[in-house]
Length: 49
Image 1 (cartoon, rainbow, N blue to C red):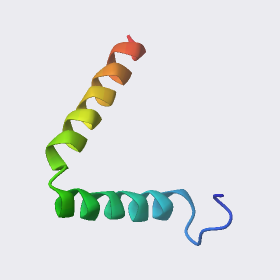
Image 2: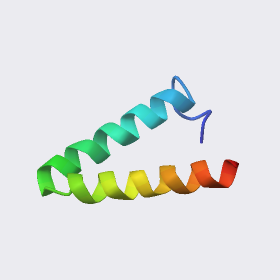
Image 3: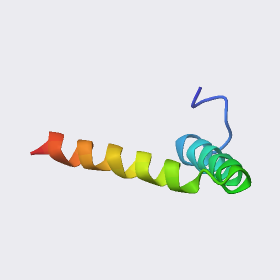
């Protein structure tokens, strides 16, 4: 997949998160997505210890 997209990994992530952000703003799901993201971040930080 990385080779199919011009710019590679970073561009793919940039486009993906831009679309997610626009959908979230359009559906008022920002709080849900932020809490979900913070939960993942917390789990990853605990796993590293």
